[in-house]
Length: 488
Ligand code: GLU
Image (cartoon, rainbow, N blue to C red):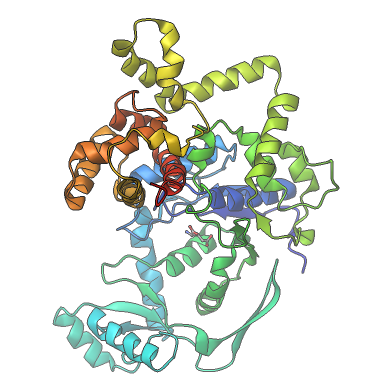
């Protein structure tokens, strides 16, 4: 299928949900859209999809915007700069969705559902027991208008669900997958408007793509199964649908889905370690183009010249850190002038106030400036090179150290805002939960985070390093300690 679109009028978007640390997968999809717009002289815009109010936070929204800016992916319209189709944050668009939901109800394409969470859980339980995939059974599908009115008047909680054809299949052509056919009976009667009046992702996504005049929707393959719901909504509203392109997900070397348990996935991890954004974009861009060996080093302009969405590379997107390291080294050596290199190093050292904070904490702890690298160098290192012997001086047995490292690693996500106070509070809570003294929990963390038992204060150091670097250091420390378990 040709997905190039017309030479003018192409509008694409990246639509991140601010529910966690900005992921390299978001940069990968954003880059595809960015290159697609560049190739066609079109527009690349950014929309924040925060319909999941419990998981979305302003902190993560700021982080995702900062991370994509760091990548060099500039958008023409977005929540930070506005534009003709605003607002660009779905929570700010809440009142806009209701009339569309009413239109679907009026046309008979949607219905009100009063089923309680407890009833839905029972229903799913029964479906699972019968070996069927969980799916709404349609109990409220045929409620009379009078019954709906009286139940609403009585204050019963209600959601709006979309109707799905009883038979046949949804056939469409995806710009990457080609012809796809998904039977309607595998598609759920999706909730469109939640009990609190907020739209779900599917509803808001389709309405916004239409209102923002998006011509091509390029996103991760995990959304392919949702296309029938989206296409149906376009049909119900009588709107033209965009061209869909579902990109293969990035994978770990063992082909499993890229996950932070195997590879660091936060963009902030790569910036903290001193990867050059151009090198990261170069690395991700290679997933979209076909080139001969030896042609790998490419700028954004060169990537967009070679980018051909009708001829995407079929090779899976394997996130090979060694290749990224190799490209990053080449960028440092071959692409940056001496002045640029120096400027990059200084910007990097100042990022997240790393250097300034490191010096502030060091001032009371040294007698000669030359002691600084040993004391605070861990704040800048990409790899501490931890060995099992580094943990030998800690009083706890290796089993206990391992338990502490793993527990803290798993609980890092619970810290919503990452700062000295919240880190300290969570570590105290972990110590309480584990029934251990704070000192016992903190000693192995010290070594894991700084590589030494004599260094800067732990909570401050963790705050400066950032969550994604701390996570990776705890993981590597746990690997080192695991070698000690059972060997004593
Ligand atoms: N908010 C969705 C995400 O973060 C966007 C999916 C889409 O592009 O439609 O994955």
